[in-house]
Image (cartoon, rainbow, N blue to C red; front, side, top):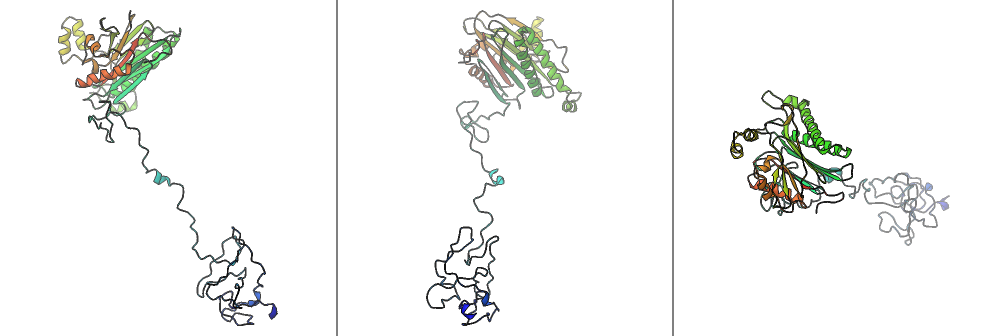
Length: 436
């Protein structure tokens, strides 16, 4: 009935102005009788959009007027929200929500917001946190720049194997590429173990790759690892240190021989090339015994803590110069001045002559320091007295410092070869004691 129809001033669908008593919109044909009566209350809009709070009049909306000239305009039907001005499309209702009669004029929210988790492709390009400044290995004071040079003295810093340092309790070793070689072909291995009686044994192995052979750096590394592992495994079982040293040299020889059988080496091997090869020298220090072993021209020196006592060289070179001196054909000074002096007559490698490991045992009557080194060092301190003169007086308690000093002496002398040295105190300290 007319009295039951809501009185509207505009069509809820197209907002065409209406006359009093119209039952259909003259513009769009909208059935005005389908418009429900305006409720007496104002529903509250929940945060999920299920209802709308109509607390303020929509006075500024075009085409909507207060039929009585005062009060709020009638609410739009729930099923037909108020339309935009003529010609504008109706915004669709949000999925899953009923129409509320509330107009949302702002654009749809984006599916992704700026504050997202970092894109891994972007974070991968971010600079890593800066590492602490690296100290120069030459002057020990300047910092190293990004190009690998010391900002203080300009010394080019070594690659990983070009300069190696290791400290194991009371002993230490240092190896350096030197100033003339393009890579470091030396290697070392140091370690400690317990003898069956509970006392400690110190092990030091130093190897020098033969530069004229194929892969000398691989040879020295394989030999040092095999010999060290052999000694550290045999000594706790009660094997006599001198026998253990002999067996370690044989194990090192087998490790170097195996390199010649690897496919990569076989492809490289030519008639004019030699198989991988190196020299080896080692020392085992216990509470009362010093054992040395060697093949080649690397050496072991004994330097007493009391520098008033004489120092001594404990090995004999497998070299042309040593053979000349042993045969009485030349003096030591003449032999080592010859250009053939460093031609070795014994080495580890598949094409070596019959392996003859040299071993010797000593029982020093006083504390001292054992220096195990390649010819890259002893070329600049050949006589035992010279080596004692270069070795710092506190070497027995500061082995790493002493090893650095010896390597520095060789570099200062020209650094023509790779330089490697291990410094081991005698006697071996009791279990639990370490370097000062």
